[in-house]
Length: 273
Image (cartoon, rainbow, N blue to C red; front, side, top):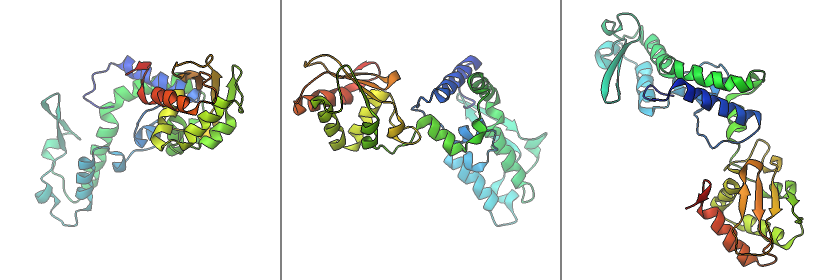
């Protein structure tokens, strides 16, 4: 959400619908929204701490914390803001005749409040209204207001803590596999001994997510399905159903290690690099 984005309103509405569908169906998303987005969804007020631009946030905080009584002379600000957009300088008065109203010790808090409101609310209002329209088409009768922003974020993106022992205990097997099948036992040995980055790649390969749902991997519906007899075929997956399609490599651990490792390390989207 920013003033330079050229998406039309329908684009933001579509993102809202997709976001709502993921929430409704408990599908984790690999998105990196700031916490301010979740606060806005819940209708909570935003403040200076929600400004993403570190330099801007630091500058406004310095203005508020300045101990002297000569704010007007030191900062030389008025109730007019200036920024660059598409290579052009743009200006906006934060209040009527703002260009002629200096920022002083007495009105600096008002200046910061108006500045923050414009950045986080007014400048993106049209975009946000479209996003929220799409979101509420799916979640209108939900109880999102029961959550804290941090809890809502966990619902969307999951938790980074990955307990593969819990995932193993909750995994289902199809196509003739069971927990005692040689290839299944080798699979869990490979995953548990793998470095964290490989474990994360495996999760993304099989479930299209690098994080666990709320409650951990033990709450994830995960399936390992037999994908034919022993062969040189690489494992594949149905990410929409958290299903790993694993050929029956039998008791050959090195073969599973090489082919599964190749599959999860070289995969990219719906194809191979």
